[in-house]
Image 1: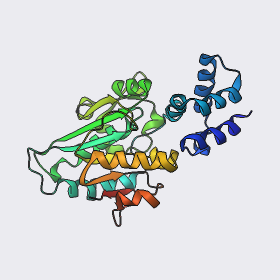
Image 2 (image 1 turned 135 degrees about the vertical axis):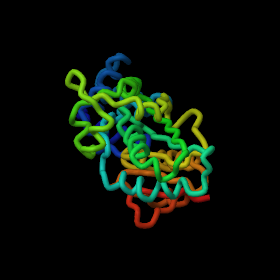
Image 3 (image 1 turned 135 degrees about the horizontal axis):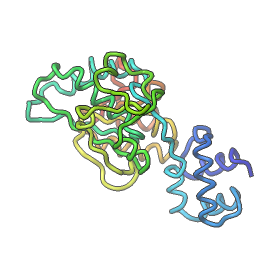
Image 4 (image 1 turned 30 degrees about the vertical axis):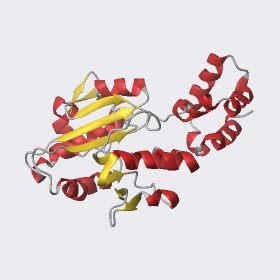
Length: 265
């Protein structure tokens, strides 16, 4: 059995978009899992997935994608700075922090981007604090986020002035300053299981749920994102991602702002 055929059949079992997992890293993790279980190839592992709900429920995490970069799709971050954050902060007192959750934070690029946007535009709401929870299921990704040292390729969309203020070159890698790191709390957490943060003003879930999930899994993830947000809170997804069908029972598009949806109810 080829890996593509395995993906097509395995993805149908658990609501996954199989084409999105056609990556060397996903295949490598699946092959390691097959070896650890002492199985004979993709056919045998597919049989196990069909018969074992526990193994099947972990497939999406096994094939997780751990690629991101700072300020990915810059126009969305400008929308966040110019429209989303001011809207979320309207009516808040200085004693009420703006609370954000970055889901699937990989190496920290997106929550740290949010922190830099905040620091660059702090004057929009003097005295108000920002509290960012950044979560991922991958321990290696969280360790990379904690170290906050990056190859230049991760910084290619960072505005020049911003990069100069918050990064410094150390032994060939770009290290992020404490002012940014201090706004982010890292947490090992699975979106689909376990406790959720609550009362979030903003949730960042970009190129994860609405790219890789389908069917019942997609709807279940949408509900959990809805539960984490406060009424009227904002969900930030990728610019190329769209909510449609059942998901629109929980979120409505924020007009004129690609990639942003407001929580209903």
